[in-house]
Image (cartoon, rainbow, N blue to C red; front, side, top):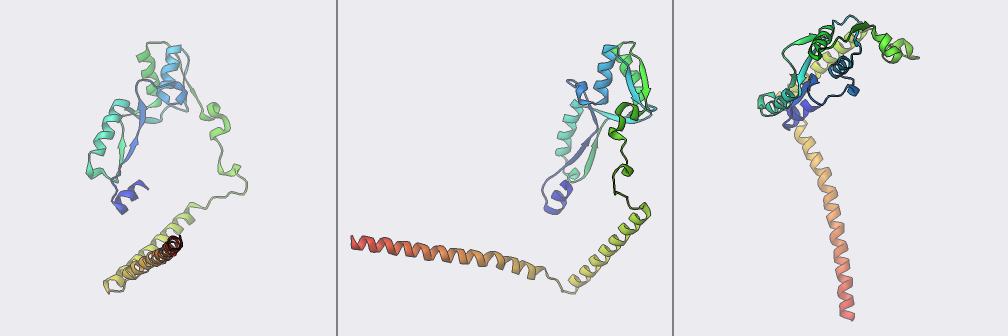
Length: 210
């Protein structure tokens, strides 16, 4: 949608996708992994790593986020283009937990738990739990997408052929649109003029009679 504002309407727009924020004033209540780990480490509580801890996350310091946003908005070449704003290195969550314990200088333990043991059924629902829902087979989905895209290509080629031969409805559509706007406006002004004239005549008659 934002890209359409720039490419279709020329409105200056930027798309920024910041990675996991990190920095001062973060609170564990947000559920973000870094403040949750830091809070647990400072309390001497277990740092819970989900599954095998091999998941990777890139982090972005809040100061870098502010500077990066300003720099992106100053670059015209980046208008309408998605920009990933993040750190230079992705860190495994298990390694992150060890780094936090070391930085906090505590002996807080690191434990691993399966995701479903932590969240229960809140994130374990699959399509077979929804009554009457059956997803389309991925092969049928790809065939459908390919067919529609091929149809779009044919329409674009046909339109390009018509416009190259001078057969285009653009000016006609513009004329019809202008008429649809102009006719009601003319009718409205005529009604207003007629009403103003009638009111002026009544006022003039009253003045003359008085």
